Structures are given as structure tokens and as C-alpha cells.
Length: 387
Image (tube, rainbow, N blue to C red; front, side, top):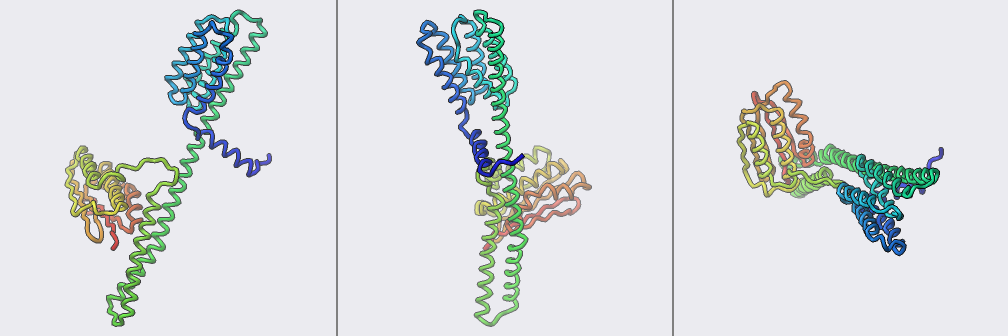
């Protein structure tokens, strides 16, 4: 079978993406309004049936809001349909067709049981109203089959919309994950190549300067190389952090608490969590964390969250825990000390538990060291502040 042409495929794709992107409930409002025109246009033929006319319009109104409030609207619609069933059966009820909108809408939202009950209730109501007074058997069967086809069509439309919406949502998730992975890969490549090479250049220039240079022009050139290298490193760290932190366009995920709260608040919250598990916690911050750049603050917040989570999972309850953060002019250092409950698995658990924190710290040019200093487990984090 020949595949559709690119132009046709793009057109189908645009329509597929456009349908679920409509405002919530808009399709139901439009369909219910169209059905409401039927009893309105035939009102002059049924001037003595004001109650039935009003109930039909109320049923259309319930169908119009089912997209926003599916369960309450469905319940109200069912009650209105029951009230219509109690009316004289000698009048046509075109507004009943709006129940098909409710069936399709419930199916689009994955509400299978309400959809099934509404579909059955609609068929029962139609069978009763269309055969009062009794109709010839052939005519009655033909009418019932026709309405059953409409019900099946409404169910199929709802299921199609549900699947399209699910596919679109999953496609958005897949795109977001792919872009995030690509950005992390680019950040790692920058760190492993350009950042490493730039750091090496700075170190070699500083070593040459320390060996002593009498030529003023050469000394000025070395200073220029060192300053330019440091500026480049700051720019690289900013780019790497942007790649690591920023969400792709269209992403809708909220920021984590450690990305929003101040470092002192994160530390206080995690200290309370540790104490609630029986740990004896001592925490201290030396320096002003408010002076830290946002990227460094977020990285430290991530470190605090992951390190303390590791303590809760793998630490020995009742043992002492020390958390120390020192904010300096050139760097910031954080140290976490606790006693593991299972010495056999502490290396693996500590390494795996700090993967996210390690990536963020290294993206800023920092280092994470995990070591065993019997009987304690020590995590040291050092992040340069540039300068």
C-alpha cells in the first residue's frame, strides 16, 4: 500500500493535532447548540408543549457543559431524560439527539461506565417514545436499528478522540524527554571537551606566570589568556546550566520545591524530615547563601535533597548526621556525614542516589566526592563561583 504523500500527511497531522487543542468543552457547546436549534425551529408546532420544550432546551444545556463538568452534567441529563419519559408521547423530541453528544464526550474522557449507562438510557427512551403510539413492527425495527447505529457512531467518535488525545499527550512527553536528553548530552560534551580544554589552558598559563616572566608584554599576554579563559569558563558554565535546567518550549512541568525555596528553607525542611526518622541532625551554614547565583543555589538544593534522601533510605536511624555548608568568595562547599545501616551496599546506593546532583554540580564545573571514612559515609560537594 502506498504511503500518503508528505503534503497529505502534514494536512492530516495538522487536523489530528488541532482537534484536541480546542478549548475544553467547545465541541460539546457547538454540537449542543446545533441540536437546540431543532426544538427551537419547531416550537410553533408545539405551542401547547412548553414543558417538553423547556426540558429539551435544558437537556441541550446539560450537554453543552458536559465537557467541563462531565459527571454532574450527565446526572442532570439523565434526570431530564427521565422527566421527558413521563411526558405525553404524542410529540417528537428532537432534543433527545443531544444525548449522543454526551455519549461521545464521556467516551472521549475515558469514562466508560457513565458513557455506557447514558447510551443504554438513550436507547430505552428512544424506543419508548418512537413506539408510542405503537408502530408497525418493520417500521419500529428500522427506527431502532437507525438509532443504534447513531449510538455506535457516537461511541466510536468518543473513543477516537480519546485515543488521539492520548497519543498527542504521549507524543509531547516523548518530545520533551528527547529534548531534555539531548540538552544533557550537549552539556556533558561541553564539559568533557571545551570546558576541560579551557581549564587546561588557564592552568598552563598560570604555571608559566608562576615560573616567573620578566618580559612585561609576555606577562600581559599571560594575564589576558588567564582572564579570557576564566570569562569563557563562566560563560560555558552558564550555557551548560541553561541546557541542564531549562525546560523545552511547551513543557508544562512545575518546578520542584528545591528550585524555588531558599537554600536555608530546603535545609530546614530536610533536617526536619531526618529527625522525624530518628536521626540526630546537626546542620550549619557558614556564610550568606543569598549571595549565591541562582544556578548554584538550585544545584545545592538538589544535592541537599538527594543526599538526605539517601540518608533516610540507607542510613542507620538513631545515628548522628552532620550537614555543613560553607559559602566562600571563590567557591561553596557542602559536606554530608552519616552512618550507613548496611555497609555492604553503601557504595552502590550512594553513587546511584546522587546521579542527578552530580550532573548539576559538574555542569557548573564543580566536583562531588563520595568516600567511606569508617564508620561514617561522607559526601563532599565543591562548586566554584567564578571570579
